[in-house]
Amino acid sequence: MSRVAIRQASSYRADLREVILETLGEFKLGVKGKRVLLKPNFVGADPCGAVNTHPALVAAARECFLHLGASSVLVGEGSALERDTEAILETIGLREYLGPLEDAFMDLNVDEVRLVSLRTRASRLKKLYLPASVLRADVVVSMPKLKTHHWAGVSLSLKNMFGIVPGRCYGWPKNILHWAGISRSILDLNSTVRPDFAIVDGITGMEGDGPLEGQPKASGILVMGDDPVSVDSTCVRAMGLLPERVGYLERASLFLGNLKEEKIEQIGESLARVTQPFAVVPEFEHLKAKKA
Amino acid sequence: MLCDRTCPGGGWNCGNTGVYGAAGKPLIGPTAWALLALGEFADRPSVQQCVRQGLDWLERASDGIRGPGSLVLAHLCLRAFGRTTGSLDSQLFARYVEGRHRWQIPELAWITLALRPSPDWLRPQIFESL
Image (tube, rainbow over the protein chains, first blue to last red):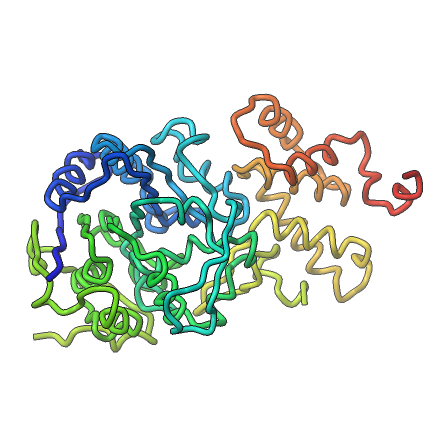
């Protein structure tokens, strides 16, 4: 049995720290003395505020983990498109929320790397160079945006882990993962570096032609939990879609976590209360739940 | 291939000219590198248009550049093609001296090139003096 928390937050000016802290308390995630890595989804230019994980949420999460006694909390991202990470950080204004980034942010695209054997063989990848900052972390927290995705169906805490694959080794936009199959690569990456916790930014999400060209969708929710498959499945349901029809989620439920509703204990807001149908590109119409 | 992968409206990104009907958006770095690579072929009719469009886009985009690495590359490229670098000079100098960014080795190398009095590094003769 897994647990997933849905919390309402109407805007990024809300007291996000309190919401996250209260939820972390319910999960009893032991972080005292541990190295925490927060992995947001920072892509780049974001005129509608629907592309990147909001820096206010990232800063609030960082404060919470430090408050709970983490020895360090590093924010790490390796954008798939933009090589100039400073340009992204300036665009989203991360410094305004986090303060000086010298000890707070790591560009995973250019971090020191180690060659790692992947724990599963869903794809043909077998091994990948991965950033030392990720491998050294005791607790990895995936912090995606609540988005539909034109190739994967949805982009949530499992898909967000694509951002740990270093551009320095594999180039941009990390085509090695696309050539090996997006769904299969998601499985291999997450079997090897499974997020210990997920905090999904659904305050403003994105529907339609995500992850870049979709429309903003104000869902007003944060979805959190320590089982990334359950968290993503709950997000998919909150988008009015069927998680068992998202290929990689269905396969992830065989070994990475729980997908079925009866195996997920919902805490916080009820799904029925927060569900808002998200538009999808025509290729993913089959993800939609039939109207009652 | 470089010209084939030009974004609608000019400039380059990772190579995606469009996805599901949405035009690919150019980025500063790939555009600057592609233009520099095409520089010596810019007179060829097959290349002229994509170079001109790329330069026009880069010039238009230069005011909104946020990252120091992109700033240096745009400066290098526009200067190499004899285009106006506008506020890039002062921005570049300000960012370099304010010490806000963690400059990495490639960026430091680029800025060293950018601050040269003339863009002679583009001409192969420079290597003959080494």
